[in-house]
Image 1 (cartoon, helix red, strand yellow):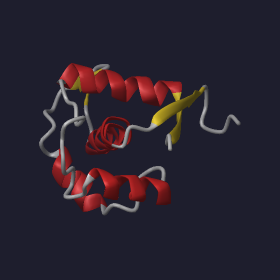
Image 2: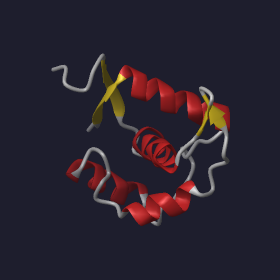
Image 3: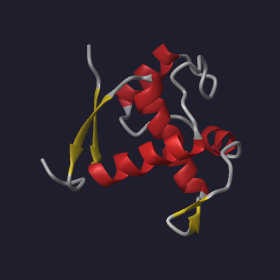
Length: 106
């Protein structure tokens, strides 16, 4: 069964680009945040934003992402967490993006 994730084009492009700039991929990462791929899929089915994983786990993992400037600003902890969630959803879980211009578009 193919999993779909709704996202805005801008959000998807930003975090895809950041992953490339930072050379980060979790496609072959067996246990992100201590969860197996199967467990992450179940978490994703429960909550498409993976907010059912404690924020402390995301924050701790985000500390390993280098501080770089993106569009003139240093990445915030929140942006690093978004990047990790992006990687979990698309690299590990393998969800397919359903892109829209804005979040409220149907």
